[in-house]
Length: 226
Image: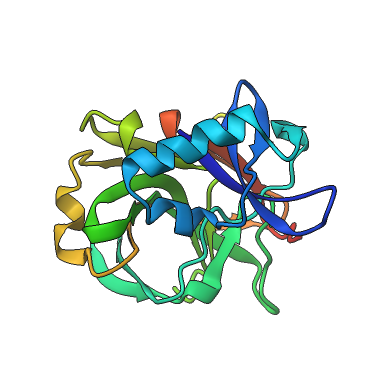
């Protein structure tokens, strides 16, 4: 299952939805994606099928304005290039939100990996690609998440790979244990991030392509903030 949070063209509010066959199906309920992930896996599957059977709207995926699939309410425990830290939830952006250059900055680095989500009783709920943007001095600027949450049932424990490239030049490759061994010491709440691979500084106008394989892909242009 692939869950997204999107901006509804009919009402203008953020809604939960599922992705299937190149389209986003609006979930016919008020629950956010985090609230749905907190439910049991059977209830989450029921919600998925309900969205496909009785969507409030259907939008072609590439025409959908995607928001951050989740917005954690508390600091996110993270391993960033091997160092333990916590990330301010206010850094979170969706893949359609762009990445803004702070005043005075001429470049940003990108550190890529995944965000793992946990539901009720600490069970693993899913993953989404993650990219932490920082100034060359190391100050966090934003944390891009998405495009979707890919749920637990889509994985078999195989390694997760997220790659970053500019044009045809590979810049970073993150490979992570698909059995969540890296997250055992960080499962303190709803989410934990592993961001092991960083890029060179990227200047305004450069487009970074993030390929998470089965997790999804997205592209962001430095300095093009929504």
